[in-house]
Image (tube, rainbow over all chains, first blue to last red; front, side, top):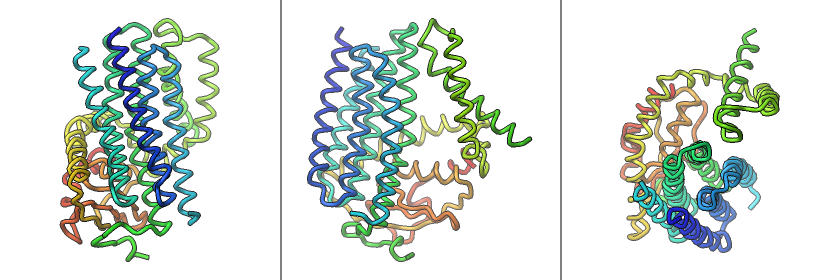
Length: 88
Length: 111
Length: 171
């Protein structure tokens, strides 16, 4: 089906963006820059998972995306708390 | 209806790309948070809306399940993304990172 | 007695969310007994842990239905427009590199946690602003502004009509 194919293409495009963000994850001068890059990648991964679930018609991946969204949020909060302590 | 899906996917791809470029181009951590948070939240909302429309068009048990899950993922992103970026920005400021070329810094003056 | 009522209400909410999430596991609208039992146990544990978070400091006011209607109106109207504008603004600044950043302070006069969270999240997603810190005692907002026009701004200059919306919807 052409619609499913378009979901797959969109997921591939977002994956390319996530790789672009990974550049900032690698070079980012401070730890905070890396954390921001990771947070951005997390958002993109949630969108990618939802798109892949629609493309391959796998409901389980949508469930994984929900759990991933919440866990990555908790992870971001913990990284932020860790940065606040002054460990760079 | 599929035209709507393609339009949403295209908008999502454009704005997510803008977020990735902003993350690379901006000069310091605060401006990077600006670009990355606004653009990826907006772009991802449209990408997920495309899936919501797809599930609604298909209907049936699976279609409704897809709509509920995608809509919940959308709500989570909308609620958690700004909160997470706010936590990161505050942590960056407390860790002593100065905003680039700032004309004023009221938070620094408070301490 | 009050605490029991609060736990019961939290349990009902959690159980409702569980039921909505598991609809597609069977034929529409039918849950198996196992599913219902597991959901009840999990919802009860969640309610025990989290009822304080929900009801403390006036959070229960968020369950009034007319607030949800107003919230939807806000999401689809002014908030969506501001978000679209914010993205075009970021595009403009990425291309031209024209920024004049700074951290400003203003006081929107919100008292509850819910109202402050609402406004802080709205500010982060709307044009050119990012909430850095909220002073719990005084209610001062510290906002990173990408294009400072005024060093001591009023709330309206930074975020337009959003403080009024925050007051009506969440406070």
